Length: 254
Image (cartoon, rainbow, N blue to C red):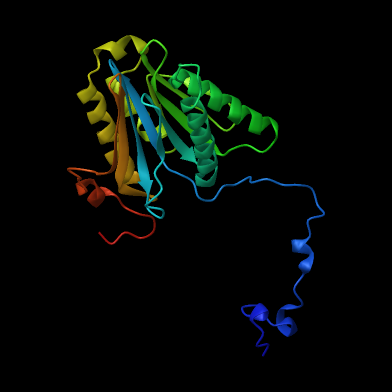
C-alpha cells in the first residue's frame, strides 16, 4: 500500500493501469464552459401601471444565493442561469455603479440604459465565443419614469414584453401572468396588488413543480418611490391535495 498522501484515493496500477497524465496537459485548443453546472431557476416579472414587480426563487442547494440585484434607486436585475457568471456580472454592475456615483455628469442610469449596457456585454462575450450563461431580466423605470421590462440572453438577444420569465417560469408562469396583462395596452389598468398577487401565485406553482427550488423567494417592487426588495419570503397557503392524483411509472398498487 502506498502511504504517501498524493496517492490516497487512486486505484492501484496493478488493477487499473497507470494514471494517464495527458489530461493535465494544456497544449490543446483553449476551451470554455459549454454546460454550466450550478444554475439558477426561475425569474419572472410583470408590469403594472406605476412600476414593475420582479421575483426569483431560491435554490434548494445554495440557499444563500440571491438572484435579484438592485442598481441605483429604480432598477432591479434578475439573474437566471449560471451562478458564477452571475457573480461576474454583479461585479461589473458594482464597478459601474461606483463610477456613476463618483461621476460629475449629474445623470443617473435608468433601467433602459442599464439594459442596453448588459446587452452589449452579453453580445461581446458571445462574439468572443465565450458567452456568459445567463438570461437577465431588467426591471425598473425608463428616462420618462415609465415602467420598463426587458430581457437579454447569452447570445445578446433582447426582448421586451409586459410579462417575462426565465427557466421553468417561461413555460409555467407566463400563461398565468398573461391572464393578468397580455399586452402593453392593459398595463395601465393593472394595480400593484394585482401584479404582486399574480407573481406570488406563480412562485407557488413553480415550487410545486421545480425540484431544485425552495419555498422561499425574493420579490421586489420598483416604483417612482424607489425599490422595495424583500428576501426569503415564504409561500403561503400551500395545497398538496393534487399530489394524490399523480401516479408514477411502473406497476401501480393503488
